Amino acid sequence: MARNVSHTCTACGASHKKWTGRCDACGAWNTIVAEAPLTAGPAKTGLGAAKGRQVPLTELSSAEAPPPRAGSGLAELDRVLGGGLVPASAVLVGGDPGIGKSTLLLQAAARFAQAGLSSIYVSGEEAGAQVRMRAQRLGLADAPVRLATETSLRDILTTLDAERPDLVVIDSIQTMWSDSVDSAPGSVAQVRAAAHELVGFAKRRGAAVILVGHVTKEGQIAGPRVVEHMVDCVLYFEGERGHQFRILRAVKNRFGPADEIGVFEMTDAGLDEVANPSALFLSERGEPAPGSVVFAGIEGTRPVLTEIQALVAPSALGTPRRTVVGVDGGRLSTILAVLEARCGIPFAGLDVFVNVAGGMRVSEPAADLAVAAALLSAREDAALPADTAVFGEISLSGALRPVGQTENRLKEARKLGFTSAIAPARSKLGAGQEMTVRQMPDLVGFVGDIFGAG
Ligand code: TYD
Ligand code: MG
Image 1 (spheres, helix red, strand yellow):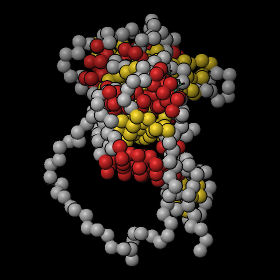
Image 2 (cartoon, rainbow, N blue to C red; image 1 turned 90 degrees about the horizontal axis):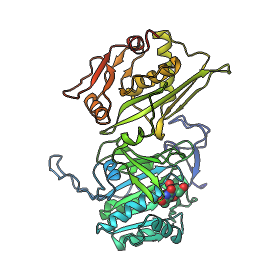
Image 3 (cartoon, protein in one colour; image 1 turned 120 degrees about the horizontal axis):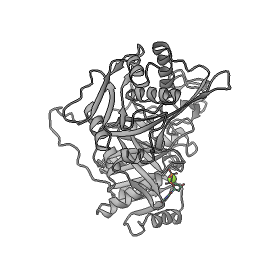
Image 4 (cartoon, rainbow, N blue to C red; image 1 turned 60 degrees about the vertical axis):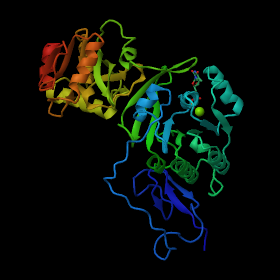
């Protein structure tokens, strides 16, 4: 029989009998790669397989205490994890090269070790001297973290089984290499096998395992999506290169809320935690200017104020530019279409640029009204009244829809010195926020009220 090569989609993990240009399962192009099978020899499961062992079954009602947690020593990391590291769990931390993953996890491992728990940092990318140099720079040279520079999964697992640490950091999963799989390190099969073994170790020995994952140009953790399914938490470390802010975002969390964010600032001596992100994101804001609007948003469980900036200028191009940083391009198109169709304010022939200050990414529909306000303010060259925060979702009919957690948004705005807010009609304001809240039923009303008829 010919060598049993399977073909796997690197985007969704589906397997195919032969190579094709497009994955039938997820529709992605050029993502299918040939791979040797994970296990050689006859199938070990299915009909005719050897008899299995009967597994114990338990009642759903047998109340188990919530998982105990161990603080990592970094409050912002603990927040994103839902309250600390859970023993016997696996966390995947993804991010662009150079964003600060190794720095973050070395800091976490060191704090963890300083709290008296045993932690091991395995670097497959850097030499011991490099990691030590970073530790020195971070002022953590004396932390009792134990370091290994190794890529052989077999040796690492043997060491871990002997040492029984409480925390293991694997930097990175793409450099790990298992001799039971005959494909190159970094390939889908290798990444999957390594993740499988390391997650198995976490569950078996009750350790918390953190895997670092590289992100491809397309913004996915290199290797199949199945790695994301194997782990308990998936965190993305993001930020703009030119900014010092870094945001750790939970995209999946079996032990806490997803979409929670932790905010850090990259300094000369490592990552500093930012306890009050709103103040930081608004710190560079000067006098109220046309095109600048403060959006009262919610990230996870925490209200965060950000500045949305827009610039509208006559275009020299046949198809005017639509450039966005930090907000969704599709969402911008929708808002522009609603402004044109429902309010009669055209943006044809105008270049439009929208940016969220500080390198923050806003994905809430509640940002619609703030984006629209920034666009109108830029187009009319009129600044919004000072000390006004804005939020609300815009529907295709031009109506404004109330959004969740209105009370929290207003409270945060009040805390930062804002005295008035613009919100959709029928928002649940709650009591005692000591602010003037102007409630608008639709976008036409908003345009007339704020910008005098448009
Ligand atoms: P690093 O943690 O190596 O990133 P990753 O593991 O995600 O590839 O961080 C790399 C960048 O961070 C590098 O450009 C230097 C910068 N940095 C600081 O600004 N301050 C510091 O204290 C450290 C350790 C790194
Ligand atoms: Mg690194």
